[in-house]
Amino acid sequence: MNLPNARSIAVLDVNTGKEEHAWPLRHGGNFPMALDSERKRVLVAFRNPAKLSVFDWRTGGLMSEVDICGDADDLFLDQKHNRIYVTCGAGFIDVLTVDDAKYARVTRMPTVSGARTGLFVPEIDRLLLGVRAHFTEPAAIWVYRTVP
Figure 1 (cartoon, rainbow, N blue to C red):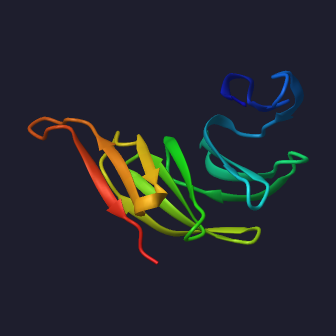
Figure 2 (tube, one colour):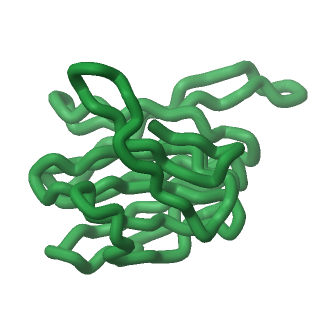
């Protein structure tokens, strides 16, 4: 469970819901998280500073860390393409590759400032991004297609 105000992650027992461990975090603003069940990792995007941290889900040990776009709101793991998508209110989507324990940014795509809420739909290889109405532009959902 993500506890941004406490700057920690709580590990809960699935059956009882009771906290088993708490992982203290070095950074603040830990909001979006994703589980990589194939590699047994927890992916956490931080806002202060803007980083993606990768933890071993058994021990809580930090495995990797990479800079990401600011004001991260959503984080998605694309198992099929070994990629991570991070949608950020700073006006970007970061695309990172996963190669064993190495994580690296492939590209930073410009979007619109404040557009940070997304949804990745792996069944159709699409990333959807909610874009707020702005002056004369109506609200929209931008659709991104993943490429091999």
